[in-house]
Image 1 (cartoon, helix red, strand yellow):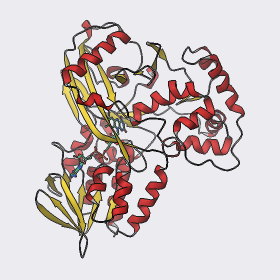
Image 2 (cartoon, rainbow, N blue to C red):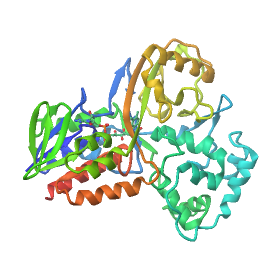
Image 3 (cartoon, rainbow, N blue to C red):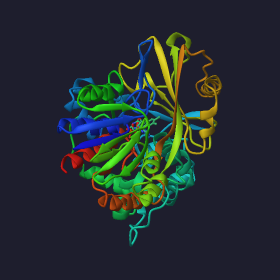
Image 4 (cartoon, helix red, strand yellow):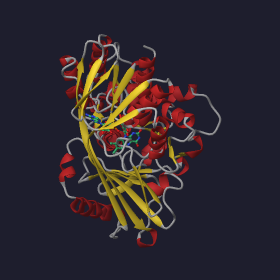
Length: 456
Ligand SMILES: Cc1cc2nc3c(=O)[nH]c(=O)nc-3n(C[C@H](O)[C@H](O)[C@H](O)COP(=O)(O)OP(=O)(O)OC[C@H]3O[C@@H](n4cnc5c(N)ncnc54)[C@H](O)[C@@H]3O)c2cc1C
């Protein structure tokens, strides 16, 4: 029984690893210059530079488990949470996020009360939210902005929800689905009414003691260590085809995949490419499924690493970096102080800023030439950090249509796809477009797709 996997990012590689482990015949087709998809690590002047993701949430176990299983457990490092301060830009200046916020939910009074980030009317409204009653019946899905506005007001949308989620989804809070993006908060609303009360009550019930686990984890040499090791593990046991799959059709028995002018026959197919690609490829298999897949919007973004000699730089604020709310944004969306977030990433001789640009509504920047992009970012860095320093090196990666947007109604659309898939045995969808955008979600869905095929 042969399985074809379309897409060789972390999702496709996790699926291939799982099928090879089960002794299955696998063909992996990938269009990229290097396997790994958006996971691409470079090392320049001793600095580890992530072109795509830089870490994953430790609370979701799938990536951590896979890393340990393939022998890389000793390479895992956690974020320096002891020095975790994140700044937000307000009136052109960096303001630290107040302590005690669980995303946009305040759980401590004093730090929020003294913070210059929010006005007094918003602070009072945040306090009164504690008395919200649960809805009589669960409310229908709505945008993240509507949800947060109802609980904490517009300023909390502008200065907390929008910048926090732009950094993760590259999307607009006026379109993202609260049910898919802030699922836990919807559960708390249904149970407690107030999100603040819900978070405090859940904390009371959480097991106490022990050293808290780091929020984020990554690998010493960068996330490409994970994808490179997966490639090593499947080498010689899986056929890797470099090329762009052009169509999938259903044959008498199984599927046929067109790639590089040839046809590959398969009993099972895992679509581990972006949903918009999967939709185009599956048009001949099921038009309705293709339509649902193509309805998933994607945003495009840019990461830019600016590497400086430390001696050239001015002081760097203590903390992980800053976010720029859309109200304050010119071009920069977020900036990470790489050496501060993780140990051993940047030698003492250097400072590295990792900048994010683009995202929904700000995608024109992808068409700017590199020099212009660097000029724009340097001007903004100068305004915010006060440095006017020539970087020792720069690295830019453009990620077109890479980040799935879970817009209102997303969960229902995914459910409709699952219904259709029940009638298409051997066809699986996996990746960041369905129920989780992070690396652990991709590992989990990739391996789950492989397991259900191995069980056929
Ligand atoms: C800039 C950026 C930063 C991020 N930061 C984080 C982070 O810090 N933490 C985190 O957990 N997540 C982060 N994410 C999200 C996470 O990285 C992705 O969700 C995940 O890596 C996606 O993996 P994937 O394999 O599903 O897709 P991709 O990595 O996009 O891989 C898809 C593959 O499919 C191939 N492909 C597409 N079409 C075809 C075709 N027709 N034929 C053959 N091959 C095809 C492509 O070449 C590509 O290799 C980030 C994403 C981006 C873009």
